[in-house]
Amino acid sequence: MHEIKYKPIGTIYSPFKEPKGTPIQPTGAKGIDGRVEVFPEYAEGLEDLEGFSHVLLIYHFHLSKKASLKAKPFMDCKARGVFAMRGPSRPNPIGISVVRLLRIEDNILHIQDVDIVDGTPLLDIKPYVPKFDIREVEKTGWLEENVRKLSSSTDDGRFVE
Image (cartoon, rainbow, N blue to C red; front, side, top):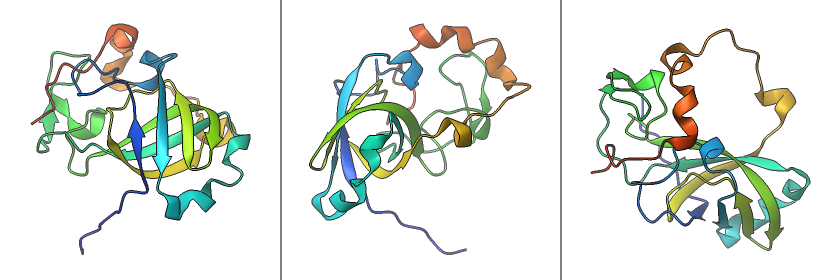
C-alpha cells in the first residue's frame, strides 16, 4: 500500500501548553474554552456548521512519542494493546474529540470542553449528530472498571518524546 499524507486545515488553540496536565477526554474538560483557526483557504467549508451544537475535531498528535503497539494507558496500570486504548502514541497519531461549538467568527470556531494541546494541527471537522454517532454498547473492555477515574485524570506526560 502507498503512503498517505494529510495537510492540516487549521490549528487548535487551548490553555494547555504541553501534554502534561491536559484532560484526557472532552468529558474531563467541561467548561474549558478553546478556539480553532481554520486556514483562510478552507473557511468557505464552515458554511452551515454553526447550526450544530457540537463538532468532531480530528487532529494530529504532533507531540506524541514514537508508537508502541502496547502501552500503559492513563487510567490503568497494565500495558494494553494500542488499539484498545485512546492514547496519542499510535501507528497513525490521529486524535478525535467531540467539543461544544459556541460560535463561529469568520474562520475562527470558538469551542468548549477542549482536551487538546495548544497549537495542535487540525486535520478535519465533522458535525456531531447523536443519531449517527451514539450507539448502545454492551461492554467497554478494560475501561469498564476505570471510566470512573476520568474526571480526575489528566495527561502525565508518558506519551511525549
